[in-house]
Image 1 (cartoon, rainbow, N blue to C red):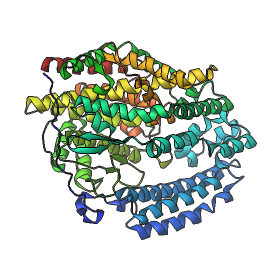
Image 2 (image 1 turned 90 degrees about the vertical axis):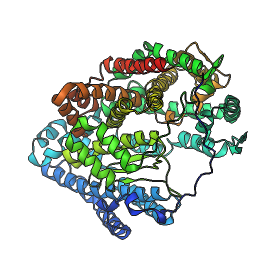
Image 3 (image 1 turned 30 degrees about the vertical axis):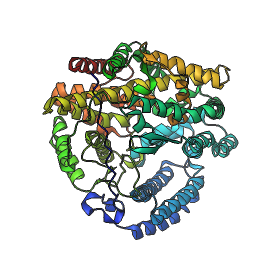
Image 4 (image 1 turned 120 degrees about the horizontal axis):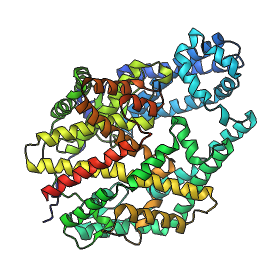
Length: 607
């Protein structure tokens, strides 16, 4: 028997204006600036300090003291720049239509661009300091807090070109985003997906409403939405292929110019991630597809369909668990789930979430979704659009809280110049919190329906993060290898490559549509090369760390806090090794696949 969610057809309530939001429900940005006027005064100071940058030119290599003088200036300038940036950006997200905040953002962007241009000589001048002299500089006590920053900067030395070549690359960089920008405009503005007749009336089909249609229990409506959605992509397939092919070609050319062995090597270099980590991820997932295929077989059974189609993979298998959770109750749940991390972690997070770290509820014009914005001097702010009837939003709050606590500890444990952690590490702390919350809710569910819902949700989340992102990563690997090997990325090549991966990952129970492989031409993340694999490695690391903390006692907990406090003081592989997980080994990914397999087994017992 198929268990399908009831659809809420009640009209949406009127969104309040920003001016109508309760003060306690909004974030307090005074840790950055007390008010807008103070921000404008600081912007004037920033522009004044920016004019001083050229005064340091041709001094950095003279002595350790002159280099330290500049770095002291750069640190203070950077802290001010970060405060200005975060304040204006966060103010704009409160109401995207507010002219005052958009003006602030625009003013900052212009000032920052001038500062960047004024400092374009700095990195080449530092890298031009002879190695022996720099080694002596690094022993000077005034450069102590800058050693890690300088060491990371000097890693790039083998790939830095002459001044003239670097200038040519810088001039060319302005056009590097054209494929991505054209893709965004085409898919978000120019493509018309039309509308569909539903029991509630005619509803528009768009990039944002696509997921709503794919989760609808009416299979005929899902099929109609699927076919209508892909029709414009089919009509523009040649343009889309040319845009993505152009982006890949740019990645390959830029890597060759700098002397990297491949585009992938160039993109993994900043985080010092060995290419073997990428290869291990794909190889390990490829040998653990059986649980994924078993899950799709279960989906086919529960939905009661003769053939599983591409438009059947997102509809929930279980009814939406109806459980109203107020903001304060959500904070209580999250802090209870995170109790294994100790009293301090829970106290700081609780004070922040019940205080004014978070902008809690939706208002007219507010940016959609959720994010965490942690900076060096400001609070680790969280944007939410929290809904009390959504358990998913409780998980989202736990996720963003993980990011914010990671930022909290990193900023308090490191100098400004290397407090920031990498994207490779960023998803670990957030998904760690989700895993602990999942286990807590599953173990304390007061109804069978709630337990089944959270198990199914967790399985879907792991599928999307572990398996699907690895499939994306494998596609990126293959497309770049094809380009580097001299194979043009035509529509047919791209679609054929992606279709083979769809067949591999979905398995024998999936019947693909003729247009299914067009999905590979519509993923915006592909324009941020070799990025998506970090989602899969991140969830693998967090699952391993969650298991270790829950079963390893005080030592495991201390190791996890070593990771949270590392910031940018270590490269991510080393930072995670100190926490107790070795991402250079396939074991964490293997363990993550086993976690997913256990979730599928749990679902099988319910059905």
